[in-house]
Length: 521
Ligand SMILES: Cc1cc2nc3c(=O)[nH]c(=O)nc-3n(C[C@H](O)[C@H](O)[C@H](O)COP(=O)(O)OP(=O)(O)OC[C@H]3O[C@@H](n4cnc5c(N)ncnc54)[C@H](O)[C@@H]3O)c2cc1C
Image (cartoon, rainbow, N blue to C red; front, side):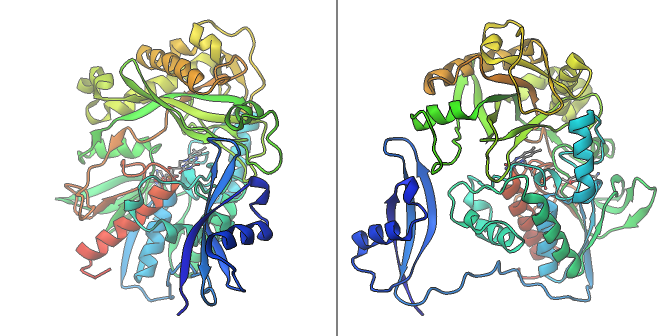
């Protein structure tokens, strides 16, 4: 068995893909290679100082490099003796399904939306005709909110599970292998749908069932178990175990659980606006040079501060991206962002949000109980919609927002349904508007040139994370009261992004295997 030595080398951006430059740097670190093979395992751009460099981790092997491990998912077509129902086919539901199949258990998936290809038509209708289908949109449908998302795969918490396993399975299903070595991997909205379709094929091939256009609308309880579930076509199905992976936009699920007295609680989240700058302006600020050139990627940023006692931070920054309409019901306005794999659009957008805590929704508690934070979120989305009465979004230039004056005109923007000039300070609750104004002033000092009336703010960025928690036991991952219910992913409040949702889906199945089926996973 050959062994390797891991070293760090530094390359200039124009040298990143040059094997001559790589060999030069490696030989400087370890002496002559004499034919020893090497492989780059991590690379990360460091633009803090000049010259801008890539820091790369490289393995130098003493013998042949073993072939890349495939994702180590072992499926074999089986006759299943057990089944588990999964509601929602986003990253959490999808990776729960793969984990079940691997363990010889049949996943039966209900997904309210449509398959990727059909869903694409509904997205075109949102962007071109401003017509939104509440069952098929940027959040609902095959692959969940992940399919037409930006596809950034970064997660801060490595404790959640085996990140490498998810990355490798995405590569096995068609993602670029560079996601395995990039410090901040990104797939891109143009590539994700094909990968999701390939994962669907794997699930079907090995015996999983996927039912599109099948929405969970009711549950029947017997003591502390859910015994039957009903879909919107009126059909009831008996179940043994239920994985709930419906995402944070499935408000009807929270309302159903509330109605059925299944324990839920309001939880903090963040809300604000999306900001868009010209990408070349962000490049000039971040790279401190007039032109980015071809060797550097479109630049990004991550900003955080405290203002008026509240946390203010940038969220889901999309270099070269598009602002997307992400509402899931009529009469609400929600924006988010994505970018293609090349990130080659003219604009750079990012969420700019303020933390929302229990004191902010306290006035709604007596009427809405555990749905008070959800109601707080809903009311702002409705106010934003009422400002334009369509999917055209209310918007304001950045400096005009800070100075609290309505913009007399708006810059060109990537948001396809269009913008309408409005005073966003009046749409947002005062504590959010004040914190954002102060936060933006601070960010303008941290990134000189960022504060500019060339930038536009678009409302509202409200679905950063779930405003409801469906509480579960830490160890068994079961709902605290309903013993055959496994809430997982972003909706019940246990994930924030594609990677963490996928890992949570896998973790829920591992916990289920250990407690419910008494197997040693
Ligand atoms: C435009 C956009 C860009 C994003 N960019 C990124 C990014 O770059 N990186 C990142 O990490 N995250 C990003 N996200 C967030 C990411 O997509 C989510 O965090 C992730 O998809 C959550 O996974 P999930 O499986 O928990 O839920 P979801 O992906 O929300 O999936 C839930 C699924 O459940 C289905 N469902 C809901 N209710 C029912 C019901 N009653 N019956 C049956 N099915 C139901 C829905 O249709 C949906 O398919 C983005 C999101 C959007 C909208």
